[in-house]
Amino acid sequence: MILRDLTNTEFQNVRKSKKSVAIIPVGSIEQHGAHLPISTDSDIISYIAKKIAEKMGYFLLPTIQYGISFEHHPLVNLSISPNTLEKLLVDLCVSLYNNGIQKVVILNGHHGNQNALNRIPTDTRISSIKLQVAVYSYWHFMKKKFDHAGFVETSIMLAISDKVQMKKAKKGLIPDDLSKKELAKLSKMANKSFVKATKNGIWGDPTKANSRDGKKILDEIVRSLIKESQTWLTGKSRKLHQ
Image 1 (cartoon, rainbow, N blue to C red):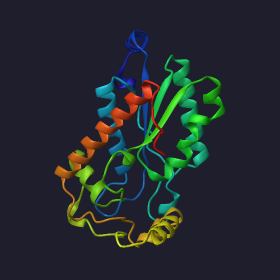
Image 2 (image 1 turned 120 degrees about the vertical axis):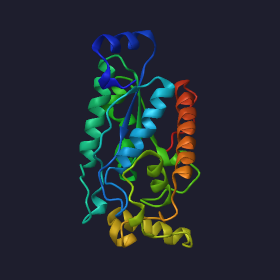
Image 3 (image 1 turned 45 degrees about the vertical axis):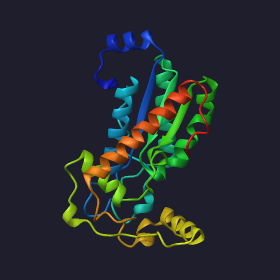
Image 4 (image 1 turned 90 degrees about the vertical axis):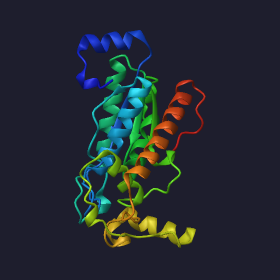
C-alpha cells in the first residue's frame, strides 16, 4: 500500500484491521558512470521496496532520495551528513509509532548509508517507545558480488528503467584477482575517495549487463528479503544483515 495515496480513513481502517508494518526505502543521488543516471540507487531500492510492500501488505513510504555519498567527490553527489540521515529516519519512525505503526523496515540502497542506518534500531528514542526497527541492505540478499555501476547494478537498471545508456558503458575497477588484504585496502580507499580507487567511478564491468540477469537478481533479492522479514515479524529472526 502506497501510504501517500491513501486517505486518512483508508489508512485508519487498514491500520486497525491488522498489525501494520511500514517500509522506508533509502537511496542516494550520486554518479554511476556515464551510462547510468545519478538516481540509480534510489530507483533500485524504490522498485524493491514496492515489490515487497505489495507482496507483504506493508505501508510503503516515499523513498528518501538523498544519502551519504561524499566519497564520490569531485564527481556529482548530493549528500547529507550521517547525523542528518539518522535524525530524519528516527523522527519518521517515531511519527509512524505515534500513528499506530509499531514495526518499521528500513531498506537501504546505498553502501555509504549503512553505518548511520545501523544505529537507528538502538537509538534511545526508538528503544524508549519499544518500536521495532529492522535495517536491511539489499545486496546482502543476492549471490552476485555487489558492485557500483558494474554488471549487477547495470543489469538491474536495464530490467526496471529506460534511462540506461549502454553505448556509454565502460569497464571500471575489476578486483577479482586481488587478495583479501589488497581488497580491504582498496575498499578503505574507496570509502574516502571512490574516484581515486576506481579511476573512472565504476567498480565492476557493466559492458555485458542485460535485463534478463537483472530480473533474476531482483527476483532473488525480493524473495530473500520477504523470507527474512517474515522471520523477523515472528520474532525468530536470525542476526540482521549489516
